[in-house]
Length: 67
Image 1: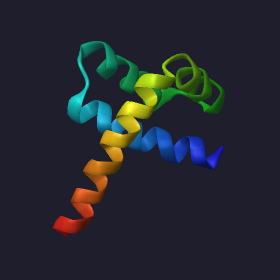
Image 2 (image 1 turned 120 degrees about the horizontal axis):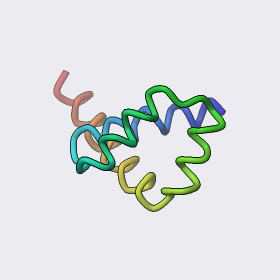
Image 3 (image 1 turned 45 degrees about the vertical axis):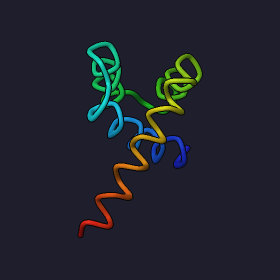
Image 4 (image 1 turned 30 degrees about the vertical axis):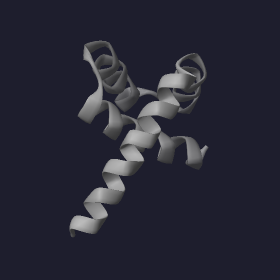
């Protein structure tokens, strides 16, 4: 479950930076989701989850290099 929460943090970062209005709303919902609901979001929107996970990971690695 820890991995899910770690991924969700990066997915939300990617969504906040690059997502459209629907994905922004889903990202907001993720702020309030428990583990079961995060898993449902991950399974239902898996392609998007993977896409925004990559975006969030790249954004975070860029932030680490800037520091």
